[in-house]
Image (cartoon, rainbow, N blue to C red; front, side, top):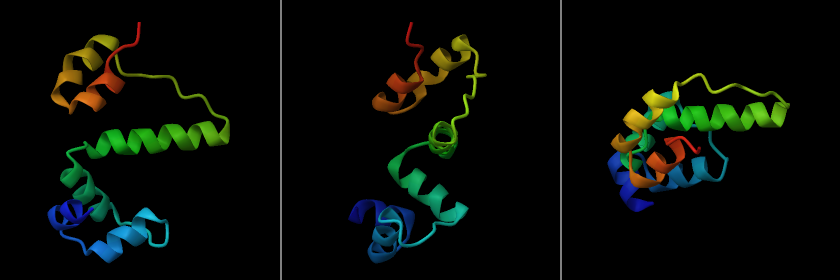
Length: 88
C-alpha cells in the first residue's frame, strides 16, 4: 500500500480511507491509483460498471469483438490478460 500511495502521489492515510470506503476518490485519484497498480483505468471502470449492472439486475452484452480482445489481451499484466482473453 505504501508503494501505491507513493507512486500515486497520495498520502497513505487518504488511500487507506478510500480503500475502506470512508472517502470518495476523484477521477484524477482513480487514474493515479490505476497507474500505480499498472491497471488500465478503462478496465477498472468496466469492472465496476459490470458489478453495478449485476446489482441492478441488468445484463450488458460484451460489445468488444473477440479478435480485438485477444489481440490486446497480451498487453496487460498476466492476470488481466487472462480475464480479457476469450473463454471458449
